Image (cartoon, rainbow, N blue to C red):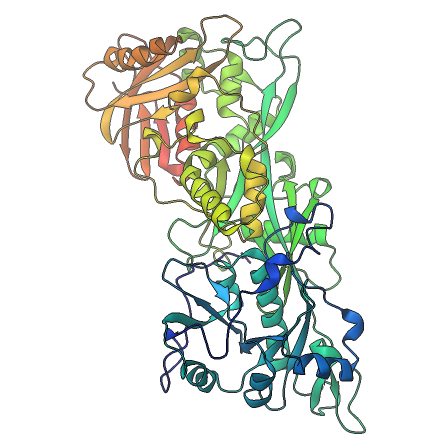
Length: 613
């Protein structure tokens, strides 16, 4: 199962009197008087070291005062006080408002709340004691019997227009400040629990509210034991796979333009596994997730869910806890984990949907045999690589890792595939920038955002992204967003002049292409391979000259490593042929780079051939 956040536009709003749920209700800010929810003046959460870094829905703003929950006299006294604030609740809905179309969404607090709690409460009444704010004012949630009747009464003495609406706690949370979101989510979750536990599951006796709304007890002589809200734990996980990078020989820079044979490998988790459901917004991908089974530990639930939905086997020893988030919609607790895919020899290889390459099986076999460098290429590719001067480590960097094949469970997901960190940074650059601006405006804490590279560091979308379907991930209120941002911030990329030139820039149609090495002039300097193609270029030299001009302006050198032709249309790409001036490029390398920058193409969609011109 995947947990994603739907669009904030999918709201249920209360109408004007005598109409149905689903529309806005306009009223003024008075009768009863509504004060700004003082949750933001409460520092109980912030006083806990590290609490500011907790996920969304975690910043509960009140002192819960659990010791008062069973003191009925005390709660009755609090409910009757003029300073008490009441949050109306109905089914999974909470009452919210904004003073203008572009204003911050806020909880609608009825103060004093005793009249509404007496007149409009459901029968029997459900009053939930939520706690005290910093000023000592009590907060209660109150389940309303007739939401339209309440709004009709609230609107009678108002003269200034404001929008009042019933929204689900989940949807409202996306637009609320994080303290308000946590408070309303808790109140909504408890209200939904009460609506489902009106009778005791063992004795069948009616139940009534107890412990300030945090339990129910059966009535009568055989009422049965107390009932408490249950929480369904669910795991949500970001699974990664590592790129093997050869370590340099002694005295040799790891960023050499033409790296030597290495003395070992290091692993970077540069690929992550994401999936999507058909019902989600276009282009939405998210981390995998699912509920625990009976008798199952969290770590095994992570591994089982990933394998069930994607066919990818997880290295159980790599599964580590990240964070948790209450998700009372209606009663879940999300537990976030990180983990890595198991080595290829432990994967269940079979045919299926994968973007890890149509030659995945043969590539995996070569890796398991310990082959590297030129040995990863076909006979024609090996000859081409040696003819044009492509280094073995450059072949490794392009073709490795061979990613585990993804086999999508179509009853669970519409799609699931691997994405490279560099592509993710490019594709999400606009979303991340927009989210950061929104978080700052709403006063949310987002300590990781400063670690993410900006578009100015050369990771903007560029020509290689053209024609791709839109891509996005759940918003900053979700654990999926938190996991993905954390992983993106771990990149070890150090900016250099070559960042300004896209690694893959190919046109549509049939055109010539050139494989290039962009490098710093120093033999110990940094480098990267490029795949550039342009249908306007009559000769391969024209493409080389275009990139050469870009490189020269940045003080960089450029080497041609062969060429060929590409037939490219959205979703389909064939790399073939040769260049009469530069020779044949090793097309496997070019195809691997194209797949990296077009991850939404199926693996079978990018093919190679050494036939033709």
